[in-house]
Image (cartoon, rainbow, N blue to C red):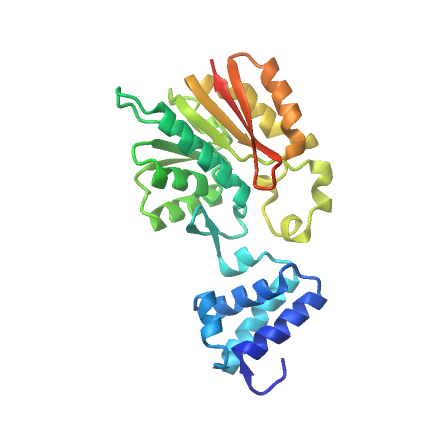
Length: 294
C-alpha cells in the first residue's frame, strides 16, 4: 500500500486480490466489511463513493485491520459485532461468535410458545444454558413479549457481555442472568421451566487442534470444548434437564449432526422423557434435538 493516492475502489481491488493470494475466505466481502468498519459507514455506501479519495489515517487504519484478519482473527472480533436474528450484537474474544444455525433454536421455541398459549394466561418460562453473548435469550425476549427468561453461563465475562447486549436491545428487565455452570445457579431457587435450550460446547477435545485457526486460536475454548467425543455437556444436560422441566416442557439442544444418534440413545435411557424430534439446519443436516418431558 505504497500508492500516494487511494480511492475506495482501488483500495478494495488491491486488497481483495491480496487476501485471495493469502487464502482468506470471502476476500471481497472481507475487504468491504473491514473498509466500511474503518470508515464508519454502511457497506453499501462504499459503492456510492467508489471514487472517494482516502487519507493516510484511513489507509493506515485499514491496513491494521487487514493485518489482524491475516493473523486469522475473525472479522466479528475485529469489528466487534455479529448479526443474529436480524439484530446486531456486540462480541469479543470472551464470547463465542453466534452462528446462523442457532437461529433454529429461536424458530422452534417461537413455535412451541404459540402452541402453548392457552386461556389460563400462563407465560412461557424459558431457560438458556450457556448464554454466551446472550443472543438466544435476547431473541426470545424480543419475539415473545409475555415470556419469562432466565440465562446462565460459566463465564462471568460472557454474562457481562450478555447484559450489555440486553441493554442495547432494551430487554434487560426481561431476562434474569445468572453466573455458574449449567443448572448450578438455579439449583436452590425452586425454578422449573416450560422450555430449556442450550447450544453447549460440543467439539471433541481430540478434534480441537484440527479446527480452523479462526476458531482454535481466537474463540474461547470453554465455549467450544465438549470433552471426550464432544458429548460431556450434552449428556449432562439430558441427564439433569428433566428435573427442571414442567410436565409437557421441552428440552432443545444444538449439536453436531454426527452426535444426533448418540444423543437420542441417551434420551431413551433417561427417565422422564417422551416425544422427541430432530430438526435439520439450513444445509439439510440434523442439528437440533428436541425432547418433551412426560
